[in-house]
Image (cartoon, rainbow, N blue to C red; front, top):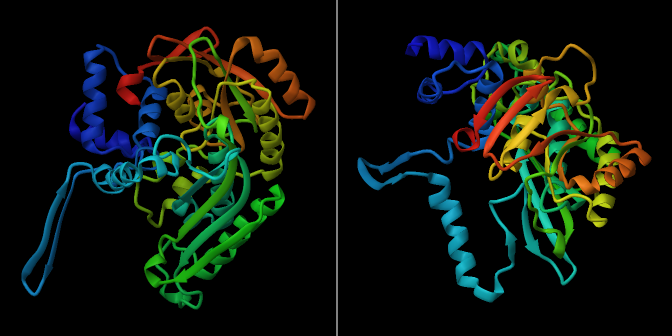
Length: 411
């Protein structure tokens, strides 16, 4: 396939990969002497998306600052994220020595800092801008739901205690007749976002203890919806370890078509067509399901029934299993995933970002006890695969193998 064909495939398939990335995928499968399947292309696209890989911040950046015709600063970064925020954090921790209060930084779903001899504090904040621009209530609602699941998926699971948020919108009295095509009025965005965050937190019994709202017309096309959660985690529950042979277990909500291409959606600019093309990328939240799942997982954690956990957010099972099995390998049985309704393809099951789902590594000897605990609390738990030691991701639907990727290539 030539460059024009690669670009067309990326756009038409909502992969939103750059030409360089599409060439890399093409050349990889040429080396394997076969064409990729749809599910393999989607797996790579989710993993390499802006949301999952932060490739803009982690990219090569050349920065020049001038004033009065004079160059004040000329600087280049091979990986801006690692050479700035990462590097500064490492230097500070090193300088603190024995007084370092960081427990886990840049390597799990949320950061962990010391609190006292029994508990540490788990903190996570993230944005949900694009979804909130096209569906304010749903985008903000699931934005908070997702950031609550991040601490739950950190270490062996943290208990959320409070939320925070920062919102930036264009001014609420912006003239309606001056709105660009496809852009919602900022007053509607403001009302939807505030309601979405409020409702999800309240229904889970987690208070929003502080926040901020800023107005600037530069946020007209894309608001800033920044949600955060603070949670407590026992000091002996801050680490996790997947072992070959552990079952891959899906817990919580069922899988539907909502949220498909949510991760890759983050890699493309918003246009007047975004609402119609990418409306399905906005997930549907159910905080009651998440509350039930939260309670049963913390009970299972305290009984030592699982060895690792992560949230099923951007990229769905694709990112969750890919992250957890990066150092081992995984075989996934997609036909066993619980569905909201029939008719989903194996690719849709794999990349759906349906909410209120977690993925766990459960040692086989603990499976029955774990399953029974979840069933007693009305929470669905299903074994959908097994972690292996092959360093390959193998995807099956019934007796058919529908995908096979090297963990080294896509992760």
